[in-house]
Length: 166
Image (cartoon, rainbow, N blue to C red; front, side, top):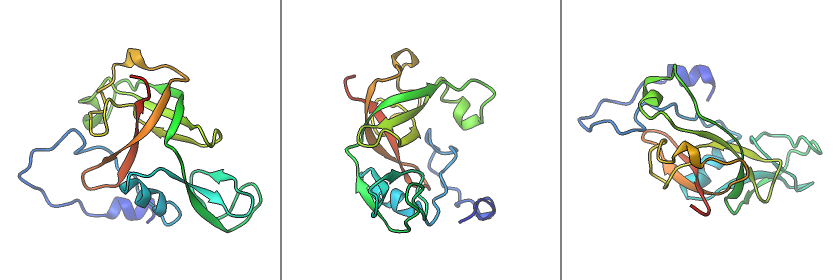
């Protein structure tokens, strides 16, 4: 699906259920190369595309290995452990769905098994907790984290992160 296709996709029908904190968040748009990532995430597994020839992990997923130019790959399961490599606390102006949850964080996690792989997400208190469930004062570069998974309404299951030693 291209960005243009995603923009032209109709919205889901309205329901009588009051919207939750995730109701109007921006949703990832899976593409063919990344579809397995989202399928594994829905099962609670963090997997990274890995070259079958040189065994180098790569993210984001793509058809060709940037290291050896091979077109063969498999999906390697990761432990889900990593460390906070960087973070930001977004400030206004924000989209309304995000403004309602400020202050919240966006973090970059460096995976333990694959330090060149860095994933963007949010540090939360629990898998289904709000984006603002962790006090910003607790964020530290290098803090150990573990992946947890959260199903977005009307979208994919996304990895989020919790502190390993809260």
